[in-house]
Length: 269
Image (cartoon, rainbow, N blue to C red; front, side, top):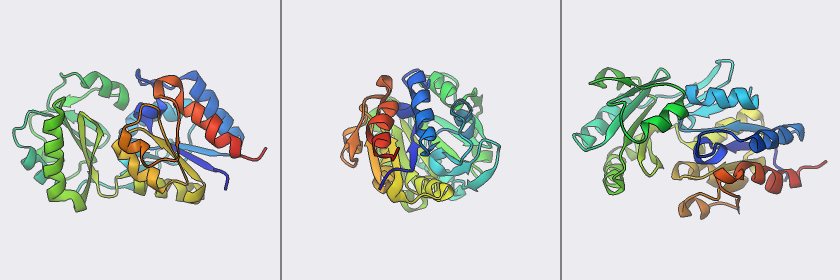
């Protein structure tokens, strides 16, 4: 069956290391649409960080923010909106305790943070297209949080915290490391496996005719459900293990190459 829809991850996939969509990728997406194949994005980013890409690529169809916790359209239409269960948010905060991590909470499309310093703040400014609001307490946000992220370059610490939070709340939330230095908590519905199903349904395309492309652990759930699963050249070994094809890296126009090599070659002229 030919592919009728491509669902793309954003960071580490659609954008390069500078968080930019290259001209080659813009052109490839245009070729894809001209061939009658749908295109959309799903990301751990908030809506604010996805809108510039949607504007650039002219995506008017549904997209997935917070790993699919919010499904929305560029005109502001909300199709799905799931939030973290309050008991999960508060319980996760208790487990983290005084661990040496920075804390980010996203609520109401605003990025709240324990600090505006740190090596990953600049990258998140680009990714979310906003500046953090630094606060001392997150308590008033834990009943309406879309995503909580714990940030640390201590990989062993973050893996340990991941295991502890997942052991307690695994069935009640989506708990993944979107990067080795980010531990993300989103609603149980906020996972890319559910997200790709919702997006494919919105496009009226069966999963068997849907392709997905990504690079990190939080992409695995959608890659496993896609009819055609593609890993970026910079993808982790765990991601490569579940895909059908591997393209070039995000700094080598991997999405554009995947479109031309694996998708448009199977689309009838």
